Image 1 (tube, rainbow, N blue to C red):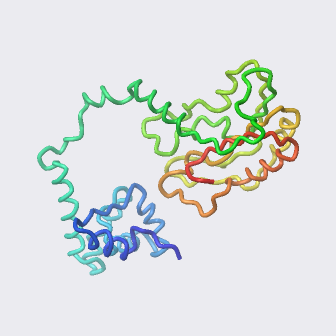
Image 2: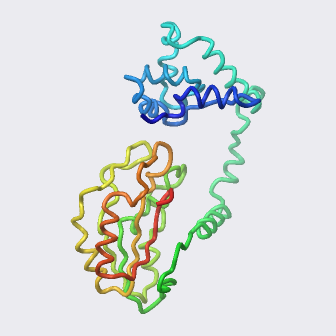
Image 3: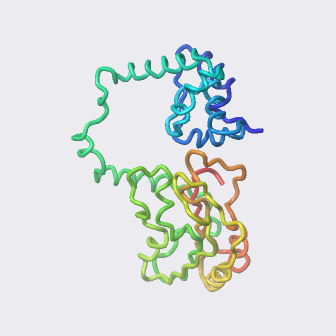
Length: 287
């Protein structure tokens, strides 16, 4: 059975608190007890998950509200020691004191600075520059790259090629949904090439959001034929495959690092009719 860190007494109590000179504050992050819901692997319900996490030494629960709802009752029932709560509160107050929040509770809230800093054009330009420099060319067999700016028949394949949301990632904060420039839009700017787009297959199905579990398409291959047909007559095929943006972030671990869903099958099907493939991976981890 897997061990979730915030309910693991050895990791939290023996290592992070007693194994170093300065005991640290351990915090169950945004989804804990959503991860406590993950911790229900160990318990029967939210109350049991809160008990296990508190006894393991997890000091703070940010979002599930299970500590607020359940800890007092757990202490009265003798299932969580009051000394554990005192210990957690001591560490939380110590951190707040060191941050200067007792002297100025709004120390890090500055509306003037917010207006001056957030959304600066210089920051947008720096982010774009970083994004360009982070692209890695793994290999370039037969010198297919760079693509020509004119006179080339290009088949662009993959749901992610037209995706304007995934490039924003998961922790997108103030970004507007579906506001990224897609690969498809970028390539359409080169009017002197003949560009044909085919989705091939969806990566995910159903509702996607930061708080929702991603449902991967593992069965629908109904649009394979259009992708294969587009590839047959192309000089070069650009396939944009990988993960949607919401597959990265908290609670998004994977046990298999291959292309999600039916994308590997799509890649192999296209390769059978055209081996001149430029594969663009969109992913938040090595694939």
